[in-house]
Length: 248
Image (cartoon, rainbow, N blue to C red):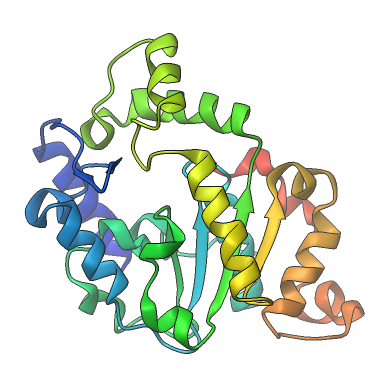
């Protein structure tokens, strides 16, 4: 999967910006599957993705700390404080044209998506697979998304000003649509599937990262003895989880 990141970079360099694909009133980044199949089929493929019982899904609205929580979760799974050689971009469901490339990933597979809850793999929901959800202050999310959109205009097709982006964001015309709709969907899912979704706040994770990481650790069922978490398994410093070292 490491070489897939280079493939993504080469594909990006060969593409031109296009209008954002749209389905059911929501726009999406023009990732390759959405360009080739259209948004409706690309979303169907995600919904029909063959999930393993052990899969762990990172679910966030765009620019809500996905890379950060992905790296923390990966370290807990692998029992190491080193960064993973499997890049988050290569395990993002929206970017994968052929899901067979995930077959060789060891279990538990750590996958991620910004799609609304209703488009998550059906199998993952049916067997109550683990979902990790990070929520971020919408004002900061919007500001971060603006800067990201300016840098990634090949897939996000945005070349405008802050005021123009803010209007798009407030009217749910940016990629992935409304922050409010996304978070309301997760909130409802937490009621429909109690215990399946672990939600953490971006802001609280910054302030109380040790407590949240311990809770996440227990969720992942690696240990139930907190004293083992840092001393025996990892021997790491919490500086490893400093947000300033992560691409948000």
